[in-house]
Image (cartoon, rainbow, N blue to C red):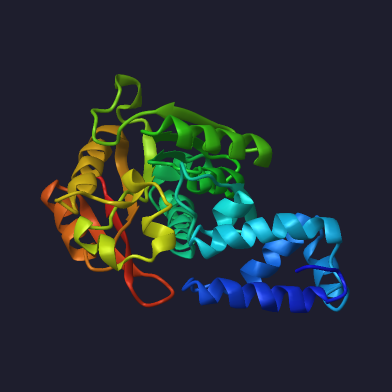
Length: 297
C-alpha cells in the first residue's frame, strides 16, 4: 500500500491476506467495504474501478482500518454501520451487530401483525398493531417494524443509555416514529403499559456463560457483554419476558422471541408454565430452532 500504481483489486487482495494471516476469518467483501468507505465511493463506482488505482490520500485511513480488523474488531464497528432488512443502521460497541437471524424474527412479527385480524376482536390491531420491543439495542427491530408497518405504534426500551442513543439516532435518520425508554426487561411494567400492546418482541441475551470461550474473538471481545450473555441461568430473561408479557399484552396478544438454538424447547416450556398458549418453535434459514411464539393467557 505504498503507492497508487497497483489496482484496487490488488490492494484488496494484499489487505485480505494480511487480515487472514492474523487469524481473522475475514471475507473479501468486508475488505472491499473498508476501501470503498474510505474513498467515499458507491458500490457501483467501486466495482467499476477495481482495475484502477485507489486514491493515494485514502490509503493511510484504509491501512488503519485493516490494522483494527487484524485485531479482530468487527468491520461493522470499524465502519460504524451495519445492514439490516435492506437498510443501513448506525452501530457502535454499545449495541449488538444486527444479524440475519433477527431479520427472520422481524418477518415472524410482521406475519403475526398481519394475521392478528383473523379474530373479529383483533381487527383493529391488524390495522394498527401496538408493538413493544424489549431490549432494543440499535433499534433495528422496532425501526424496521415501524417502517414496514406504517400504521403500527411502536415503543422500545433498553437498559443501556448508550444503546438508546444509537437507537434514537437510527430512528431519526431513517424516519421512524418510535417512543424510546430506558428500562430493564426484568423490572415490573409501568402502569401505563398494562394491557396496552398487541405484540411483544425481543431478542434478549441468550448466550450461556459456558459458551463464552467458543465464540469468535470479534464477538466475545468487542460486542457488549450485557447484550450477549445470560449469566448462570440461560432462561432468566425469558422468565422476565413471560412476566412482562402477562402484564403488557392485551387479550390474545402475542409474545415472539429469538432464542439460542439449543434452548428453544426450554424457552417454550417457560412460556407454557406461565400460562401462555398456542406455542410454536420456528427454525431459521439454517434449519436451527430460533423463534418462539406464544399467545397471552
